[in-house]
Each structure stands twice: as structure tokens, then as C-alpha cells.
Image (cartoon, rainbow, N blue to C red; front, side, top):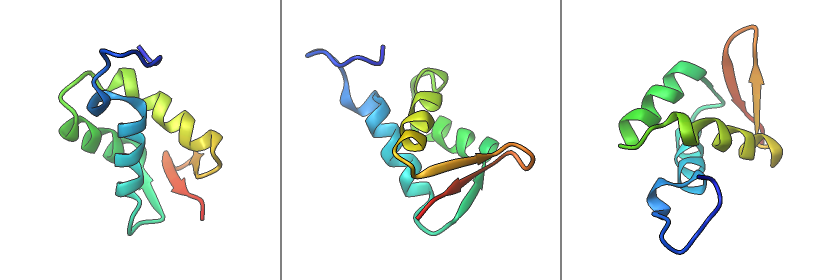
Length: 78
């Protein structure tokens, strides 16, 4: 579930995964989609499908992430 509630584990939330995605871009300008997905699978023990796409959507809505479909590449926007 994406909505917060008092029993929610914040270590398994969209905000936490978004912060881990930001860390992946700390010294890179772009990352392959599959590489980023696999690294989030290693980082989180929960079902990544539930949090990964909403985290990408959040970062895109904030204007920090762009997706290049032709290269299957996620690009960090400064």
C-alpha cells in the first residue's frame, strides 16, 4: 500500500526506495533500468514491484529523473 498509516514500516516505503535510487545516481548520470531494478531487489527484502515504479514516478514528477525508452536508460537531471 502506498498510503501511510501508523503501522507502516518506513524502511519499506516509496520514500525509502526513492532515496536509495538517488544514492545509485550519486556518481553516475545515467543507469540502465534493469541494473537499477536488480540493485533495488538486493537492497530491499520486500516485493520490489510494489515500490519500484511508484518511486520512479515520484522522482520523475519532481523533475529529477528521465527515462530514455530507446536505450532503456534512466537519466538523472541536475
